[in-house]
Image (tube, rainbow, N blue to C red; front, side):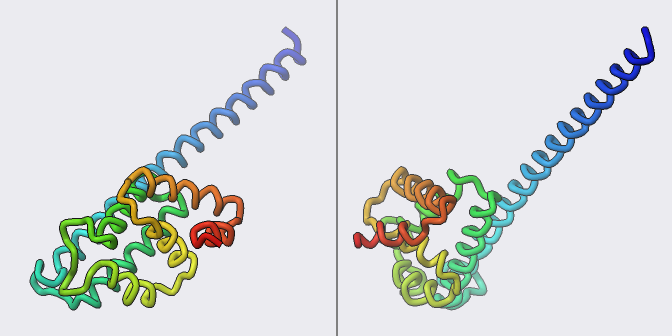
Length: 179
């Protein structure tokens, strides 16, 4: 074995080591992302259940219906941004949106909070409380149809994600309004 063979083997070993280092780095990043997603999901669920525990007529001390809906839609806005950044899986986020859809269209067991319906909570409080036009447009699109079908919500969520990736959010708004 000559020096050129040793140099070739050393070069291959170096390339393999670099490849393995890159692979381990990718695995490490994926593991960190998975852990971050789990933390994000746990935080969202904890925040929602804490909010439910102080809803008027449920928890002690209760908060006002207005404060409840401000917090609910603030949490929804946070979840929306977590979803957009890949920290919430689409199937879970879609399920949460489906729950809001059912509440707003009066198909959930809880039809109101402190005398304010979920639809009023969105239209009169949520829309004015959150100052993110993209989120407002997104929620309006998700809630536009009266059908109470989870697959429809999931379809809309995927449709929005695809259009957003292509930068076509204006088209999405036009499509939902029928113009």
